[in-house]
Length: 203
Image 1: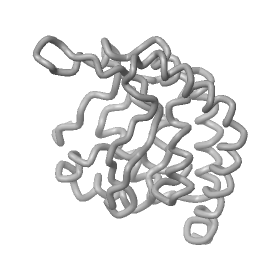
Image 2: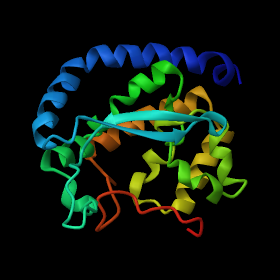
Image 3: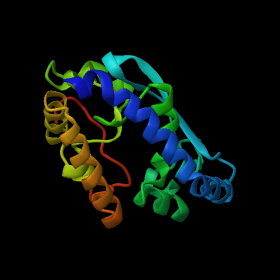
């Protein structure tokens, strides 16, 4: 309880600031490469997401897809817009690094349930909605137990488990297993999908 109430936020600030300094060469190099790979579509991806207690904030990530469209003006499928550089950035989780800025601002934590789409909010059951009792994280308990290979039901169960078991020991375990997951590049997406399939409320 002491860690959750008094120590987690200061730890988030210290760790995110340190990681921004350490990864600054990677950040700068990625920005340069994406400028060309994304074909003028921009370097960063901004989107509104629900955070602590469902409060909406704007998340920032590296953009891994182009904005290419078909003859009718509709965006092409994710798989076609995902560039080779974008696939590498995503598989190594480099696309998540700009979220360190969200952690510094207080929108996010280093560890917590991943922030999902605003449109999912009315679809959650009361139990699933408990994931918003803590700040969303760059990585989390669900991410180290299957990442995008999980079903939505499994993902939410892991999120609620984390809310009920948030301790320093749990966060250390997440950090350790996140490193292993990133190194192995496991569970980046569902089979046959470039990204996680949408949540419909019936999963």
